[in-house]
Amino acid sequence: MSLETVSDAQPVTHRTTEEIQALSDKAVMMTNRDYLLNVHCVEHGISQRDIFTKARVYADMASQLKATGVMQYGVPIESKPGPTVTMEFFGQKRTMIMFASNDYLNLSTDTRVHESIRKTLSNYGVGAGSSRVGTGFSYLHKDLEAKLAASFGKEAALLFPTGFDAISSPAVTLCSEKDRILVDGSSHACILEGAYASGATVRVFAHNDPERLEEALRRSEEKLNGGGMLVMVEGAYSMDGDISNLPAFTALCKKYGARLLVDEAHSIGVHGKQGHGVVEHFGLQKEVDMIAGTFSKSLGATGGFVAADKEVITYLNYMSRKIVFSAALPPILVAGVKAALEIMETDNSLREKLWDNVRHLAKGLKEVGATILGIETASVPVMIGNDGVMFRFTQDLIKEGIFTFPVVYPTVPKGKSVFRLALQSQHSKKDLDHTIEVFGRLLRKYGIIAN
Ligand SMILES: Cc1ncc(COP(=O)(O)O)c(C=O)c1O
Image (cartoon, rainbow, N blue to C red; front, side, top):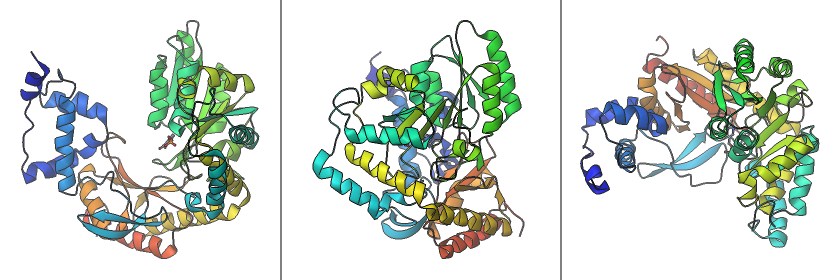
């Protein structure tokens, strides 16, 4: 049978308005490939003989959801980043209070960072031109790596093109079939990607639970046959609103001879005396084997790094495909990140304003009856629970000039849907108060709290 015949045998039906509304409950399919492939296509008897069939199913669903306003992913932003931005909904430009950006300290628009990038541009150009082990390495890269190593309390550091690459690469590069990798149940996709791509046996332990990690370590140790163990956790979990129990985890890793990697993506700029993250917050720089992070959140740019012992960094540098076969971070970004890092370390007022906003929003939301999952991170996760209302709730928020994403199954378990409100140091109290008032009203409208 030709591929064309296979595709034609699976016509994509046109849905009624009711069916589209029902789809909104299932709009989770837009965010999870596995759900689409393993649940949706199977449930609807859709053959996957042609690898493109699923793309047609997805495109059809996405366009219908977009047309009805149910799907708000990937709406272009028309202004510079900040606490309020201009977005277009149904042909109308609107000013929106932005709660979906991770530019926590607003360093993306800091003029000191821009100045440093401007100066670098004329001397170094735009792109690195080659990989880090090729000719893409400059004194700027060398200097930032040395600074990162010193700032994060490790012997050496290595720059990666993205945070995703930095956090997934150590597992892929250091582990293989004979090893075991244990990951937290709330782990970001890059941790899972690295763990599974390595070929090691992967075990997931209950979120932030040292007892379950110990159980997993004990079992894994018994089954080890010539390999080793790696544990991967995040410093701060922005969907759960809590920080990692690193004192317990470092002790367990030591006890069972496992290496520990901490992904500080959401904690850099937010936690620790100088903003170096949760490892700094607990003073565990020596105990944590690999500290990894991204420049795309508090540091307002893009790129990532791993800091560790010298020999581990050398090994990663020459063995990691993301280093050897991918162009190095552009010099202009290296200069921008260095400037942002220095501001983050020396200007505590940005962090203080951010935390003041976190406390203000969380307190106000609690007062209007919202359930907040945790208040240890720069994002306030508001529990909704009822997956079915999430997309209509989001549309109402948009009408009120508030932008955030609905977080639903399978990103979180069924019935545990949340709105993750990411704060910025430049959010105004007026905008936060408006958000609190709107949430109070909508939580009642959708029966999440009693009238
Ligand atoms: C916890 C976590 N780790 C890693 C990353 C990847 O970072 P980047 O987007 O800079 O590649 C993200 C990005 O969303 C993240 O949330």
